[in-house]
Amino acid sequence: MPENCIYIARSSAIAARALAGEMMVMNSADSTFFTLNEVATAIFQAADGHTPLRDIVRDRVCEQFDVDPEQAQADAEQFVTELSSHGILLVSNQPLATETP
Amino acid sequence: MMPGPRKVACVEIGRIAIALATSDDAFLDLLRERYEGFLSSSPPEFELEFDLTSTRSASDDDVRVRREPDAWVLERGDFRARWDPTTGRGTVRQNANPYSLDSVLRILHSLILAERGGFLLHAASAICDGRAYLFSGVSGAGKTTMTRLAPANVTLLTDEISYLRPGAGGYSAFGTPFAGELARAGENCSAPVSALFFLEQGPENKVDELSSAEAVRRLMRNILFFAEDYTLVEKLFATACDFVDTVSVRRLTFYPDARVWDEIRNFQGVPQHA
Image (cartoon, rainbow over all chains, first blue to last red; front, side, top):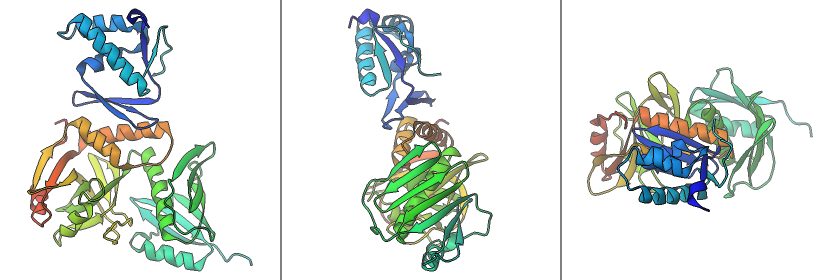
């Protein structure tokens, strides 16, 4: 899948909460639990289903954090792959309907 | 043979009164004996009617709790229960084994509490100087040991299953009749929770901070919840986060002698976020 057309959305089967500066995400289906760092949190919060991942990395990650753009994109794709394998994020090469309210 | 007249024992745990109805006198005696300190004359909010069978007495099967359109269904090898949360009434088919009865009650309370922002926690709890302290951890971590080491003026709430409910300004812990290795029911009383300690045994007593995420992760791992229900699991997660936001959660490494209670008595904790 070309990196410039990845769309991501948060699954409806998750619960997320920021506590003491940390974003905690739980998959309600199997109670697996994740803690996201600041960069991952920025990507997670921007996962609206219709903003391409490339734009999220450019606007939310590279703008706010001192990171190399290519490295940031590679890290973001790895993060998205991992969270999608746990059912936290939905990934598509087309815009997705947002599942979360 | 016609069943005898229906008789009721009302068991109140955590200020939630449940009427347990049976037509079997021997089972009624068992109920009254097992929950002696928790019998209540309060009007029951909920009711379970028991239909006794002669099936298997105990079971190591996994429990299954699922929501059907009109009721929760609780199943294990040794019992099958249906409980309608709208009417508050349910039926239980089991034999007269008290362990099955404890399991059904625990599951029912876990469902009721989840809706009300509370939870059951795999933890010992006790009241010291008017405040409740919780001690959680894996089997063998020292929950029962902590209760055995407690000074005489400490009130045991449970050595196995702690009962937590939110209230004004925090959470309160209530005594439960659900005993672990100590084989002794807790006292039927409550107190505001001062701290939750996750136990580890070590060469000396010390209290360490936990990050909020780690506190929530450990808390979720030790909450007793059986239902296959996304909505309630999400609610429990929110409750766990709120608990960590409100109550001091720490790791307590302890050497198993009575001095650990000095550490607890002197603990001046603040919640994770503060």
